[in-house]
Image (cartoon, rainbow, N blue to C red; front, side, top):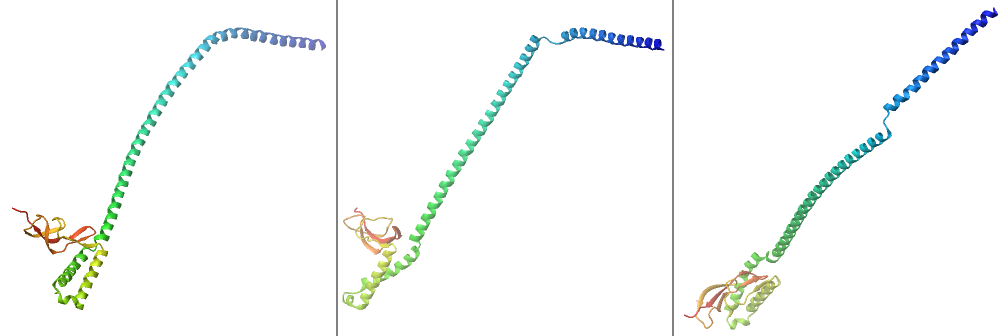
Length: 228
C-alpha cells in the first residue's frame, strides 16, 4: 500500500508542475507580443503635441473671433440704446420747456385778467355815475351870482366835490380838454369853429373821463378849424 500511494503522489506532483509551467510560457508569449502592437497603435509624443497645439490654437482663434463679434454686437446695441435715450431726453426736455412756457403764459394772462377786473370792473357803474356828475355840474353853472350865497348852492357844490373825490379815489379822473390839441383817442369833435390855432380845442360840451388810464368816455369838444 505504501508503494501505490507514493506512485499516485508522484504523478499528481508532475501534473501540477506541468500546469504551472505551460501557462507561464503562454502568458509570457502574450506579454512579449502585445507591447509591440501597443507601440504601433499609440501616437508619438511629437504628433500628439502638435495635434494638441493645433487644436488649442484653433479653439483659441474660434473663441477670439466669437468674442470679438459678440463684443461688437453688444457695443452696437448699447450705442443704439444710448441714441434712443438721448432722443427721448431731448423730446421730454422740449415738452417740459413748452409746458413750462405755456403755464407761465396762462399764469400771466390770469394775473392780468385779475388786475383788469380789479381796475375796470367798475367801468359800467362809473359810467352810470358820470351822468350824475354832469347834472351837478350843470346845476352849479346855471346858478346866478345872487344865488351862489344860498345854502342850496353850497349843498350842491359840496355834493359835487365829494363825488369827484370818490371818483379820484377809485381811479376815475376828469380830463381837462380846454386849450389842448385835439386827440381822437380821448376827444370827440362835435363841431369846428374859427380861431387862431387850428386843431386846438376851443369849447367843451361834456367833460371826458379816464379810468386807470383807459378812456371810458371821450370829451365832446369844439375844434378850431384850419384856415383856408
